[in-house]
Length: 337
Ligand code: EPU
Image (cartoon, rainbow, N blue to C red; front, top):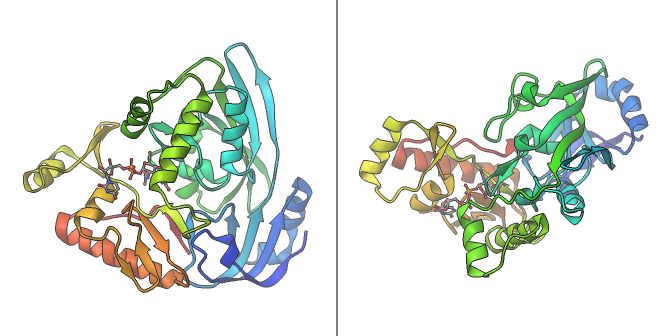
């Protein structure tokens, strides 16, 4: 394990904004990890664990140590006629795990195809898309305590999962390094295609969801048609979270905006932030080098040469404008550094 100084992070974040790290290192093995945990550069500095860099916005240089997670490996731990238990190391690319699963005919994460980022980031965020969420299949998370290096297993119930949320983003933020995730997937057919865009896809293409691979393909096609590819137009997916409101609040907004779309979710109402941003006039707008994507208002993009500060300013303008129009506060999903 080598620790580098004053490291350029431009290629380490999918927004491709410039920023530098005081220290930088890459972890490829358990051995690298144990060396890292005793290194003074690690012990005495602020730490940032980076996977795909697909959910961060650097607004300034990072005055600490950035640890790039390249821990690899996917193994089957246990199997019976109905299900399979899989352990994936946290540095694996999430979509590679999806491919591994659908190629073998397993069900459970096909709706989460093409979500950028690593396996380690998945439980932090409780990633979700097209009617599925990681918490539906996750069994446990293996982690190391940053302070002591001690190993800990978080059972699903201990992860305190919510919408794009977990214990790792709250009570114990920054205190653990996630080393692996253990999932239980189904071998028995369990298609989940109730999400509107997915249902429409199968109706329009007159095909059936016979395998998890069929659903994966559908999700890939839908995502490609709506969401900008970070390799072409740098972005970090949804910049904001959707907004949850209670009965009273929704009635107030509906009285003024009867066309407001909303969805029932765990006893509350979810309003798509993309709709609020579009309605506030931001879809496709560009300020300087940053902008709001023309096909999806929830995605902020770097048209080339934008700084993190520039994107943050745009996000703040959008937040202020949505608040003024609807009285609703947008919360970033992206981690601002
Ligand atoms: N909408 C608009 N204008 C837009 C975009 C969306 O009006 O420009 C409205 C439409 O009513 C649409 C609704 O928003 O029907 C929902 O849009 P979409 O299905 O694209 O989903 P979303 O709620 O905007 C969430 C996730 C996405 C995920 C999709 C698909 C969040 C913050 N985002 O977006 O995740 O792919 O559902 O399930 O929950 C990501 O996290 O990076 C991400 C892309």
